[in-house]
Structures are given as C-alpha cells and as structure tokens.
Length: 257
Image (cartoon, rainbow, N blue to C red; front, side, top):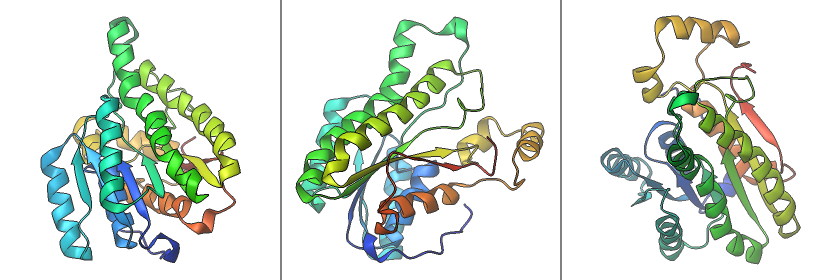
C-alpha cells in the first residue's frame, strides 16, 4: 500500500467514524487512515479474518483498537444494528464512509432480476440506509459528514458490468438529494469517485500486464492510483477543512476520465 498520507487534521481527533467494507482493499486504508488521525473508528465487513487482523494491528500501532463488527450489508436490519452497536460503544456517528461495494463483472444476457436486485442490495441500497441511520444524530448535533463512494466506470462508458455501473451512477443523485435535505442541519454529503484503484483484488483478478499498460496510457498521470490516494481525499472531506464542500464529486483517478 502506497504511504502518501502526510496531512494531519486536528478536527478528526476523537470523532466517531463508521466505515462500511473497512477490512480490506480501499476500506482497510480508510480504517487505518482515520485511526492514525486519532478518530474513534468502527467498521463493518463480511471478511472477518482480515478485518480482525487489521483491528489488532491498528490497535498496536495507534493505541486505540478500531471496533470491528461483522456484517453483510445486504441485510439492512443487520446494518442498522451494526450502526446502533457502534453508537452505543463510541457515541453518535460524526462521519459515515459508505465504501463497501462489489464490482463483479457480468454480461447483459446473464443478468436475471434476482441478480440485478442483489447488485443493488450491495452497491446502492446500503448507502442510503446507512445515511438514514446516522442522520438523526448528525441533525441533532448540527454537524456531520457523509462520504459516498461512486465510480469512474460509468462516466468513462465502461461495459461488462451494467448492474454495477447503474448502481454507481445512482449514487451521485443520492448524494445531491441527501445534501439538499441535510444541509440545513449543517450535514455535508459528498461523493468520492475512484478510478482504477490498485488493490489486491484488482491485482489478482484483472490487472494483467496488458491492462496495466492501457491504464497507464489512458491516465494523465501514468502511476498507479492506490488506496491511500483515496483515503487522503476521504480524510479531507471528513475534516472541518472541507466545511464548505457538499453535494459535490471528488475524483481520484490520475486523470482517467
């Protein structure tokens, strides 16, 4: 993982941060980044073994072990219960990071109604219901930051996963609507738009030498975009330094789109 996190945000110290999919990939970088800022971090993931290992490691490194809660975000009742558990343990959520997703490839002709609904249940529906769950506490305190995760894939017209790109495109509308509704309570809602972020999953499944060369050619900056580059943007959007930023998209893609 590229270590490029150099900024310190005093406003993040002791803030309660809830991260979905925080145990692996971009999510693990997010969890580590917020923990390093002194935030009180809770995260959920379906990958229990790496998540518990991450929490243990960060506890040793920072002196404050993140709260890991196993959760399948397709189960909205379980998602709500996880948020309630985090609030009981750490306090009301100050920052929600809706990171969890699954970019499984699929062909148009293979998509069934059941598969379509399941993709929405992973890539779109939890972002709304997590925001719904944390909003009352943020409104009561008249502050908060919700960070949704979109994708550059639909913007660049990428094929091979229509249910995923449809869900990710919808997140931009969700962000703008939530920002309007929650803005009077000083709650900010923004979207991070990652490009091709080189996680272990990407390395194992799709980043062939040929694909990597094409990625470098298409980006303005040829270097690989890593999870920590995304985390750097998330930290800024969570901190008071971005106090006037809401209803916006922030792209981290090396100039890919």
